[in-house]
Length: 306
Ligand SMILES: Cc1cc2nc3c(=O)[nH]c(=O)nc-3n(C[C@H](O)[C@H](O)[C@H](O)COP(=O)(O)OP(=O)(O)OC[C@H]3O[C@@H](n4cnc5c(N)ncnc54)[C@H](O)[C@@H]3O)c2cc1C
Image 1: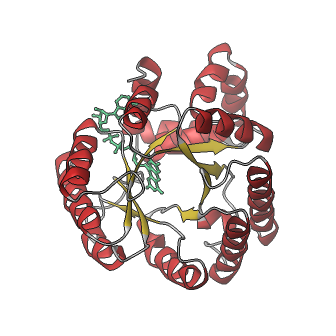
Image 2: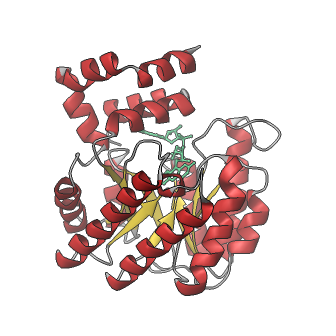
Image 3: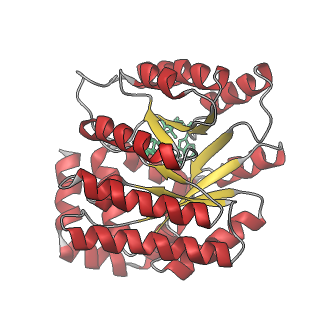
């Protein structure tokens, strides 16, 4: 019910105008999104890097349905990477890319070529790319494209979602030397046939996957705001003797900023996922609609900085 209402709101240009111009909106959106322009992304990246955080930038885009849109997204990443390098913000800043924004849903080959161009630009800028993971129907295709990209750009990062039943096995596959793997719980609404449904099952799966990655040879990137999972990550880092250059924590921009600072103060590498672009309305509404629990997630972030 709630999901249907949010989805309807996300498609309504009247509600979008209302939300976009409401006095409280600017502050709420600014809390989670750097701004509409590339310059906004650069400015916030500079501030975050100055405070000791690493950053991964995500260019927000509407659903990509044409090759022209996919190319425009690719070009935005190419100029972003050039600007990051010119500003001296690499390698502290890298980029996160959604293959769907590069054409994956209608032309896998095109998405792969676009991603390859972004990886080459990242390489030239002295940094890396992480391929975001979307809903489970795209997992195989995304991992196939990752394997192709890693032949030329071995530091390309993968994302695995603990709520998927297959993920433990994917972690084993990807826990090899030099392999950067972001582990998150997963943000989409997935059927029971492929995904754990209860929070407890998802958390248990996260810990099993974390153990595989932290005891393996790769570079784990623990993406979570969950205090219990962060504490387990800290514990395993001590246990497996992993220093700040051998794994990292990741959190979303605007969520638990004080915890991000605390971890930096403890000497850990912490990377903030920073979205920017003018499609913030679609971004926030889709995150809410995909999983109405995200409503509580964002509301909690507005109420608390810890
Ligand atoms: C860097 C990064 C990249 C991501 N990339 C992807 C991706 O590619 N694909 C994908 O599907 N998903 C991605 N996600 C989203 C992820 O899958 C989860 O949906 C999201 O992170 C929420 O899960 P959680 O682990 O924070 O725990 P939750 O289950 O949301 O929260 C667990 C606990 O954490 C604490 N907490 C959470 N939020 C707050 C808050 N705002 N304020 C205070 N306490 C809080 C509370 O104690 C809460 O009970 C990414 C997340 C991050 C951080």
